[in-house]
View 1 (cartoon, rainbow, N blue to C red):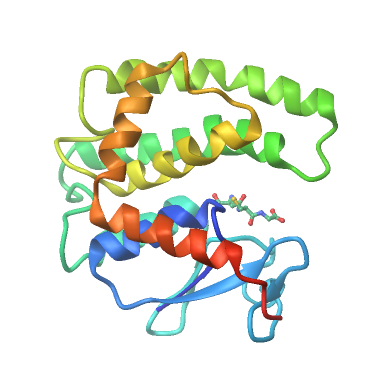
View 2 (tube, protein in one colour; view 1 turned 90 degrees about the horizontal axis):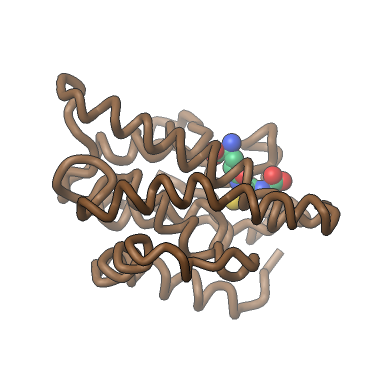
Length: 209
Ligand SMILES: N[C@@H](CCC(=O)N[C@@H](CS)C(=O)NCC(=O)O)C(=O)O
């Protein structure tokens, strides 16, 4: 498989999932501002939105959108169980949290906060609008270790990414003690640490077009 990613973009969640799942994946770095693919190529050639994550499967199919990519990776895990089984009600809770992070936190909030074209007033509005969904997920995690069920799922990988970048956009996690404790718990996972370390190293390296 090949995962198109950009360091510390939301593709970090799929990257973490690949490591948690023990999957053999080639990480293909991209530059989101130019849409260039490292080593040559154009992200638009594989994704009409020019976005990451973009996953190319072993049988040559292309899968787009965090929720789909993360669920696909979870279902192919050779190690950890990263998603509830299809006949469990928790499977729909997984979809709930993947959708919640994607819409209420990522696209309505962080995408605008970090958007290179967002006017300052839009960034400020987006920061303020994150208080509600972060409060909801903080209350949820005050009573439990993970978003769904009893163990780490791909929804946790997605929320972990959001919590990791939020402070860099001026979104303080100070009011959300349960989220900060949760983030620390996830950071103790070897796969999470390895993915963060790898992307940190990549971010320091010049992009080789
Ligand atoms: N709807 C997509 C959104 C993915 C997304 O926003 N990716 C960002 C990185 S966090 C991106 O590629 N941005 C570049 C762009 O939109 O031009 C999904 O859920 O996967």
